[in-house]
Image 1 (cartoon, helix red, strand yellow):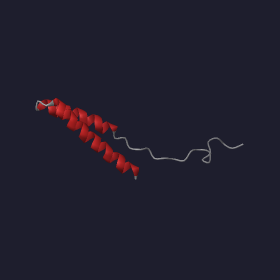
Image 2 (cartoon, rainbow, N blue to C red; image 1 turned 90 degrees about the vertical axis):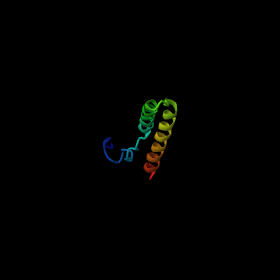
Image 3 (cartoon, helix red, strand yellow; image 1 turned 180 degrees about the vertical axis):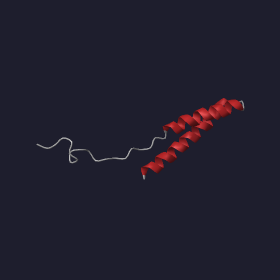
Image 4 (cartoon, rainbow, N blue to C red; image 1 turned 120 degrees about the horizontal axis):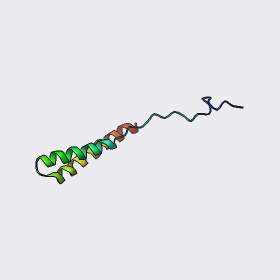
Length: 65
C-alpha cells in the first residue's frame, strides 16, 4: 500500500499567483479622495478606477510569464 504522504501522490507544486484586485480598490479610494479634495469626486473615482485597473492588468501580465 502506498504512503498517502509520499511525494508521488501529491499534486504538482504551483507558485501562487499575484493578486492585483487590491490595486483597483486602492485606486478607487485614492481617486475619490483626490477628487473630493478638488470638488470633483465622480471624475476622481473614474480616473482612480482606471488607474487601478491598469495597474492590476500590469500585475496580471507580469504574473503570466
